[in-house]
Length: 52
Image (cartoon, rainbow, N blue to C red; front, side, top):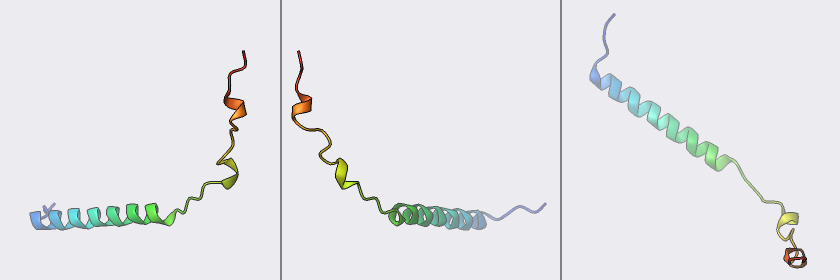
């Protein structure tokens, strides 16, 4: 079985690293997260006081 030249290994490493970087970047920016507005002030200040 013939072995690959080192320049070919370097090319494959650069190729797969670039593909992984692009895939990760696209996954990060394609998700648009919007927090629900109803849970922003869920706790009132009266419920945080101690009841002895």
